[in-house]
Amino acid sequence: MYVVCPDLEGILVPEIWISVAEKAGIEELRLTTRDVPDYDQLMRGRLEILKRVNLKIRDIQEIIQSMEPLDGALEFLEWIRERFQIILVSDTFVEFADPLLEKLNRPTLFCNSLIIDADGTIADYQLRQRDGKRHVVEALRGLGFEVIGIGDSYNDSTMLEAANHGILFRPPQNIKSEFPHFPVIETYEELKLVLEGYL
Image (cartoon, rainbow, N blue to C red; front, side, top):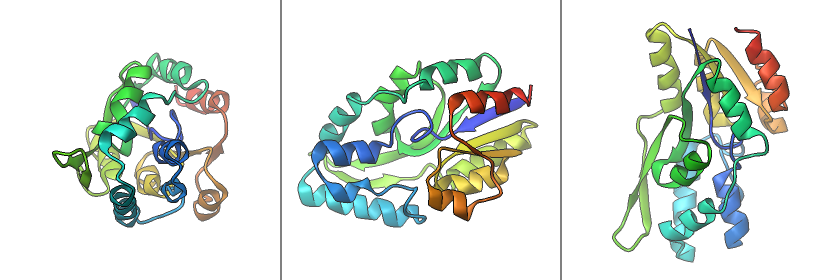
């Protein structure tokens, strides 16, 4: 039995931090896991910026509330659900993801959480476990599932390596260049054709 494990951001919804950067006018927040391989370094930088500009959790949630899934993402997700088991795996946070999951008809998501002060300042972040995406895939394989991983960033690479089948979806050029052994897919229609090959 197959389980499809897509990342959330860049695969089904826009990059949250880029949307926040654009709406709040904070160019430094545009960096994502497509640009920075070290997730802790990336998050520490983000937290510093949020404190410096006094951007609180409610401000970010308001921006996320205005976001919509990528064109065709909901239809693609429903197409997968009719044919496979699916678990979204992401390094985003429960406190960010909820409005987006609502718009995707509530798929299962494994992600992380934030530590928030009483005044709404994001004080820190808490990983569910280090390299959590890889651990999800390894656990599913240990349960006898065949896993199809779909990602687009540095922080997806160990998940894709651990999966039976790893696929890059609309990755930037630096990711394509650094991980040339993964097939690159650019559209949901192409991705459906690849996934149909496993049925």
